[in-house]
Image 1 (tube, rainbow, N blue to C red):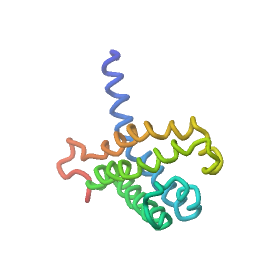
Image 2: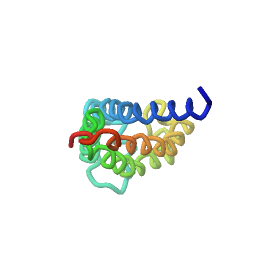
Image 3: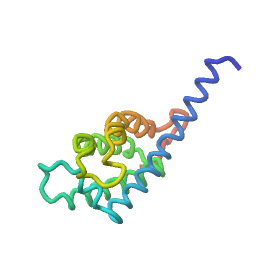
Amino acid sequence: MNPSKRTGRLLSTVRGAAPYALGGLFAASGVLHFAAPGPFRAIMPRSLPKPTAWVYGSGAAELVCGAGLLTRRRWAGPASAALLLAVWPANVRMALDAGSGRLPGPADGKLVAWGRVPLQVPLIWAALQSRPTPHRADGPRG
């Protein structure tokens, strides 16, 4: 098999798996928003009122988007990309606060905190791979 076909096959495999991986990540993170809201509250932009409500709201949104990605709903990719854009300010807040002692555990490390900021780009890409496959006439449900 020539290298370009191998690369194409690999990219196709990654594109197919990406929404499922992100769906699982969203589901786990959504549960954590409810089970242990403290770390999420700590990274909320300070300008937002009622940070606990925002933590629970974003956790619920992650659970819904995770379920949508795992079941390949038509709306799940764009909704998940929008959610990732919406929570990006919290990742920036986390990076700005890194090293201050305000954040719990490893999140207070600058490398971890600043590493999350650009990580949103491949996560958005993964969400957008959830689009309907062209070879199926009916496409995913939703």
